[in-house]
Amino acid sequence: MSIQATPTAGSKLLTPTDHTLVMIDFQSQMAFATHSIDAVNLRNNAALVAQAAAGFKVSTILTTVAEKSFSGPMFSEITDAFPGQPMLDRTSMNTWEDAAVIDRVNAIGKPRIVLAGLWTSVCIVGPALSALDQGFEVYVIADACGDVSTEAHNRAMDRMVQAGARPMTSLQYLLELQRDWARGDTYELTTGIAKKVGGAYGIGIDYAKTMFGAHEG
Image 1: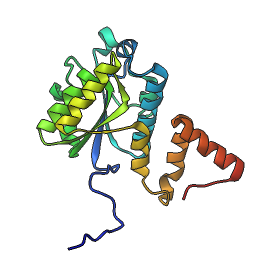
Image 2: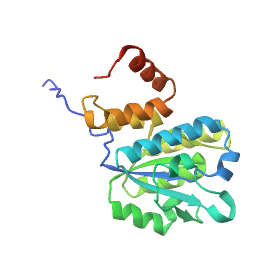
Image 3: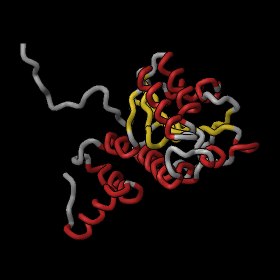
Image 4: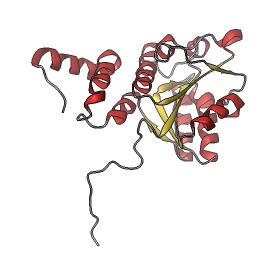
């Protein structure tokens, strides 16, 4: 029997309403020792993820560790996207072992968890493996994570993928939420974020619009 194709999205693709984004420990003290990605790229990618989530109204949890006593505040690129949203501060390295965070995960009630933060091998591996163990689907935004070395980051990603987590990138996250340029209500949002923090892709959009009045879709 032949397989019949249909013009529908695959079930493994993310939508704005089917997941909870958890942004973890984007803080000064953690960033100082991050060497797998430079600070400019890290902050840019974190901003892209935060602005995408805020714009598409994704359920989002912002969590810090020892904010007042050691690690410092969360990057303003993230908090600016979610004005007034409280940080859930923890003592545990593994976000999934914090009762306040889990209360929020359960209150939101989404079956998929998307993770980004510092450091990959500790603060992302912990909740990724824990959530997978409890039956959640887990996605990790690899270029919005960082670690003390490239080796540490890569081995952490390997470990999570081997356990069933699905890796993606920050720009991929934004474009997967949009997914169809015919969705006019979020077209300007998506291209606007790309122009500000979408790297070379955003430069290309800005050029095409300015020089030729080009419009995707």
